[in-house]
Length: 274
Image (cartoon, rainbow, N blue to C red; front, side):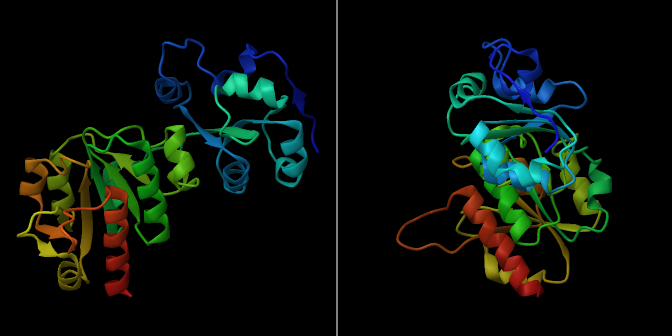
């Protein structure tokens, strides 16, 4: 294996990607505002391995001695600093113990302009007001597994590449193309003008049932809109949408978790299009 760098000082400036210099600054803001377009943190040996197997631009890797041995095969080809710290030191640097002895810092993928993102896409997901990072990560993972070409983040969404979102997505947040809408809700109109039919997921009783809606639009480009749990999509987004779609529910349940609901819609689209 290439040379590794052993570290024992939790204040080592070379490890700043992994720890906030000023504890008053939220970790997500440090990651988002970092130089060179920002970076993302991958946590855990499985996610680190998966990420290193892609063409992600690695800034550095931080592991315990035992993980260094277990990841030796994949770390051997890493063209970036590999730091090794004892478990207690690593946990103090990172601030928690959920990483199982391996974390990596990678450059954030370059965001494509929304218009370029739509080129060649047939099915996309559009998120509005989703602030839960676990939901965002799950949406990325569901999109990757169920044939969604890209994800668009509209007004009020949290950082989709915050470490928890990346972890829950199992790295797919770094692989599925995405863009942030620069003009909201104006970009919804742009989607329609680009040939997408906008399907708004809502529990409203008068909305069209999901299977019927997807069957009717099987040959068209679609954009599936999902909103925050609780309030759901804004009235403006619902008004601009072409079709309001609901998932038929039973036993008095009015709705599902947003990531689960999105997964069902992605699957139904894939099923009728196959």
